[in-house]
Figure 1: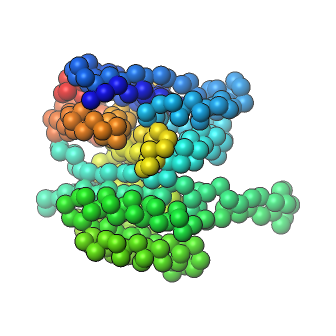
Figure 2: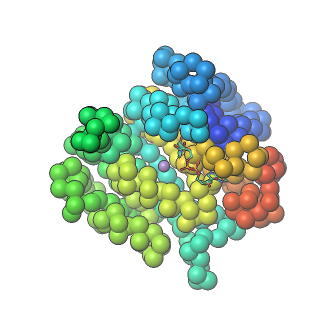
Amino acid sequence: MGTYRIAAIPGDGIGKEVIAAGCQVLEHLASGHSDLTLEFEVFPWGSDAYLETGAMMPEDALDTLRGFDAIYFGSAGDPRVPDHISLWKLRLAICQGLDQYANIRPTRLLPGLSSPLKTGTPQTIDWFIVRENSEGEYSGAGGRVHQALPNEVGLDVSVITREGAERIQRFALDIARARPRKKLTFVTKSNAQRHAMVLWDDVFEEVTQDYPDVQTERVLVDAMAARFVTDPESIDTVVATNLHADVLSDLAAALSGSLGLAPTGNINPEREAPSMFEPIHGSAFDIMGHGSANPLGAIWSASLMLEHLGEKNAATQLLGAIERVTADGSSLPRDLGGQAGTDEVTGTVCDAL
Ligand code: NAD
Ligand code: MN
């Protein structure tokens, strides 16, 4: 147990609402542990700052963040600012600048909740999606030329490097190895994309030689989307490139109940810089300011943050509180079929703690 400095960046839209909720729960949790101290500093970065100053965050933001043990992030995205600016100048700038190359997305059907997949037979969802978080289709390589002319061109170049592929694949294989089923599904699209994705496959072929105890399979991304729906129990740990895992993990989140529930961590596995934890959802323009946002994704993300900080007991206690709230079912947010607003759900999680 120890003292940790947390940089909270609520950002935009419901990010502000769910990070406030998450901080409240974390403070309540820490108040019950004399040997766990969480020191929050809140940074008002995001689209409000952009509209005021022209910058989503200050120039020395990454240096500031390096002084923290972890980052707790809400969302970047505001109807008044183009999405590619809000995302690239805040969230992606942090992920790339701090080399948080591994994005983790545990997905579980929590007690009491139902999935659109529920068919009457007992069904479990317990997936762990590992997303490459630094290159692929979101590397930022590309350009736009001949603007506004008929021959205008836009290019986003998918970048796969041997080093980038190897480090994320080993990270995923290590996770698969530590889970009971020791099973990893490797997602690719090397039938259609014949350069970068074939390198992605070749590296996997080599790296798996070091993991004879992990059962692996190779699945094309389109078939994988179908597998999530038709055979969810066949899936355990999954590794995929940046774009593929982005899409698959929103699908996974919806299949496990709601996007509002799903947590993620942007991990720097070597711990050379702080890692960043956030709900996978965005700013939810349609419900921001209503007080109805589901805070459970942000709260589950806080549990991932505690686990990363080495506070396994506190992390498990927090996840247990979330599970008690979903199992009980009397205080569920609207996206999970209930009536409770953000504050009520947050209070119920605190009570469950
Ligand atoms: P979104 O996740 O904001 O919303 C999708 C749908 O899910 C909406 O109907 C929304 O109401 C619902 N939803 C999401 N989170 C919820 C919650 N906690 N409780 C209840 N309902 C919830 O995705 P979008 O509409 O594609 O994007 C909106 C904005 O957010 C865009 O600017 C986008 O760029 C940004 N965004 C940011 C991040 C990020 O910062 N990590 C991620 C995704 C989207
Ligand atoms: Mn996404």
